[in-house]
Amino acid sequence: MNNIKHHSRLVAHNGLVVSAALSVKVLLTGAAGQLGQALIASTPPGVELVACSRAELDLADPAACRAAVQAHRPSWVLNAGAYTAVDKSESEPELAQAVNAGAPGAFAEALAETGGRLLQVSTDFVFNGLQGSPYRPEQGLDPLGVYGASKAAGEAAALQLPGSRVLRTSWVYGPVGHNFCCTMLRLHREREQLGVVADQVGCPTSTATLAAACWRAIGVGLEPDAEGSLPRILHWSDAGVASWYDFAVAIGELGVVAGLLERAALVLPLTTADYPTPAQRPSYSLLDCSSSRAALGLEPVHWRAALVEVLSSFELNASR
Ligand SMILES: NC(=O)c1ccc[n+]([C@@H]2O[C@H](COP(=O)([O-])OP(=O)(O)OC[C@H]3O[C@@H](n4cnc5c(N)ncnc54)[C@H](OP(=O)(O)O)[C@@H]3O)[C@@H](O)[C@H]2O)c1
Figure (cartoon, rainbow, N blue to C red):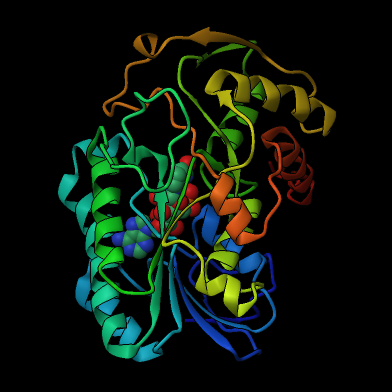
């Protein structure tokens, strides 16, 4: 394990990250993931962060999850790690369940003994997408596939622990990691034209705005009264609505403006039927974030504005 400063954007993927300030101790999982990296880069003053990637903590091992809580005795576990391979989960349901449901269950069990709390990051895929209007936090769940079902089970396990919270989000992307934005930038560069699904609607969410919401969701930056009255289930996405097609077109247009692309490829709209995948995806997965945004005290950012910010940060990494 390496000890490195939490403010560094060059944080080693396998690093144990410990900040100097001491007031809220947070055990972060998924440190090498795209949200984990954004959380490390935005760690607020006053947070002592213990960041674990897969090498330090295997989320498929419940005994290791319990032991990490017992060893570090954090105020919060911020569980940003997850089995996120939506299609692959259809053929690896046991592993998806172990990581996405077993780990939060083990954290909740251990935190009940140590007196800590759990923030479980979850997904729009817990809904079936048939509603046609934004899903509210308190609505019932009906996941369509293995990934969504495992995340729904993770929510239930987390909520067993009094004081724990669930924060659902959608269509996460940022300047690092495997995500739609990075893939589309590459495809815009490589191809004359590309087909993208236009009949699935949701809202892209930048890892930067999501990380800010996560810190608020564990009370960092909130007055104690506001923290105490936060709902147990929160929704967070950037503002607005898009199809994957809209998002791909915007990445091309704004990628040119940001100087990341010489030209945008022609994007052709596809239907879900044109692009079959092992896992069924919700056709409509907008999250109603209005009450959560008010409770967290954060202003909504339109997804195009957030995309401009993300693309500007790509300049920091000339290899992309
Ligand atoms: N990505 C999205 O579009 C999206 C949408 C809605 C909600 N979410 C939720 O947002 C959260 C953050 O996702 P993300 O986008 O940051 O995903 P990500 O980039 O795929 O990161 C997930 C991290 O979890 C780690 N992980 C997977 N299996 C593990 C295991 N057995 N032990 C330890 N670590 C393990 C991965 O490690 P490796 O790097 O070693 O593989 C990876 O670093 C997750 O809860 C996800 O369900 C994501």
